[in-house]
Length: 209
View 1: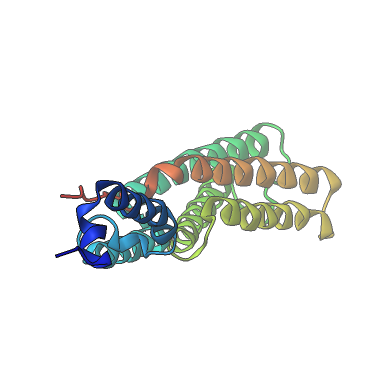
View 2: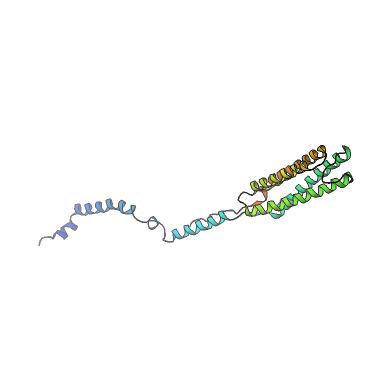
């Protein structure tokens, strides 16, 4: 009894090899249109990658924190330096050179009292600047740059303010110089210590099993 065409196809090794070759030739084309997630790995892999992406995005977009104790200790140190600078400058210029500095304090006030009053003003300004820097670290994208812009504007205003008063020119110029030196020192010190007081989140990637 003769073989049918169907049986002869399976019994002929050449035809079976041709069929396997045709299927092998079609596999690269089929694989190119298949979903990549279904080729390798379990079906839960895309979900795990999405959760990892969301976690990393939340950590990167989170606002940086601040080491408050470190910041305020450095702020107090900067306030002490600026206050000592103002106390020595006012005491020396007013006591030895008899120049009415600062011009905001009357001539009848002694040199020590004027120097103490201006040093207290410097401490108050330093504490306010530290509070401003603390606020900017929490809300600003670039807190140091924003602080330098605001602080520089404030220093320019207090430097120009004595020049607008009707006082002796020498007193106005010396007071403006003291304000410029003290304000620049304060802004520079706080801007220098600000990066060390910023606490950023550390991104840790989980190892894939």
